[in-house]
Length: 99
Figure 1 (cartoon, rainbow, N blue to C red):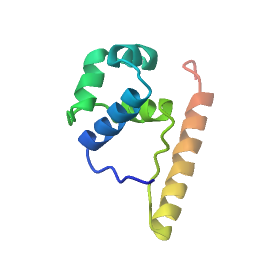
Figure 2: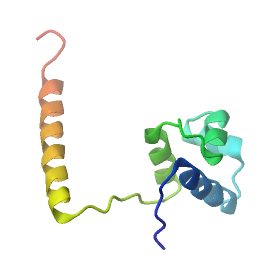
Figure 3: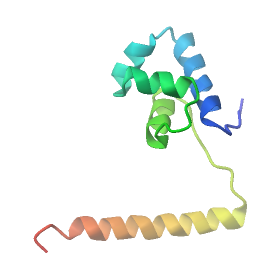
Figure 4: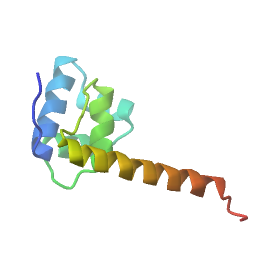
């Protein structure tokens, strides 16, 4: 089933639901995921200032796939931008600190 996430609260509730169904305590999951118990509490309560990267990491650890549904022209533009960023990062990683 696809559920559209439109807020941190919805993501937090999804994570809480999956965590509880797996019978994992919040502090145990936080420890395993490498985040603080406070972060987990903030996320599960919908605090809007939680870090997006950590939210995505937690969803992945719970086996949840996150996707963007883009119009075809927007998807093409997205792919082009990703190629540019990856090429730029690859070039920057080849240039060492001594360069």
